[in-house]
Each structure stands twice: as structure tokens, then as C-alpha cells.
Image (cartoon, rainbow, N blue to C red; front, side):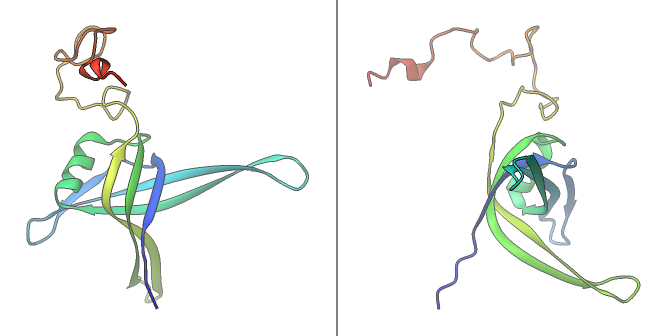
Length: 145
């Protein structure tokens, strides 16, 4: 029997990423994502459903997410679903699914709000100083097709 474990999720961060390090000094970041679904019930009323899931990333990906992402920022993550089990302080068995992130994509521009990199120098219009002026020709505009 073939096995395939792949998850792609788009959502907004529910909290600021929390960076820590393993004993091997490998960076690890944990954050939550919320994804909304809107649908109509049988009675015709519009309903909303939100799915919350915890995510974990390692290495360079962890450092990048920690540096550029903040609560509320939209993000697409790709990875695998993992199942964690542990025993609670009261002796009860606990478990949860999480996404182990292997790749991600920012879904808004770097300058679009709370996820903005505070180290970047910005001009009066809020754009980075090294950005071309608004309306300037871009290299891809020269492509003939």
C-alpha cells in the first residue's frame, strides 16, 4: 500500500512565532494558523467555520518565519501532518496533530503591515529606500510575450 502525507494550508497566524533552539542548536519555531471556510446551511443562512492548527518549522525556515511573520499575517505552508502524544501533568494521555512545515510562501508584501521587517529602511511612503519609484518600469515589463 502506498503512503502519502502532504498538507498545504493557507491561513493567518494566530500568534507571534515562538523561536527556540534544540540542544543541537537547531532553530525551531512554533506558531498557529487559522483558516476560514464560509458556507451556506440547508436553511440558506451563511455560516463560518474556522480551523486552527499548530505548526512547527526547523532550521533556516524557522529563522525566516520568526523574523518576518507576526500575528495576523497570511501565510501558505506546505509540509506533513504529524501526531504528537504526551502525558499531561494530571496523568491523562494527551495528543494533537500539527503541521511540520517543510516549505512556505508569504502571501502579502513585506511592507503590508504588522509583519513588516523593522530592520528595513523605509522612505516617507513606507516603501523600502532601495525600492524603485512607484510606476517605474520593471525588468519583467521588457518581456515581449
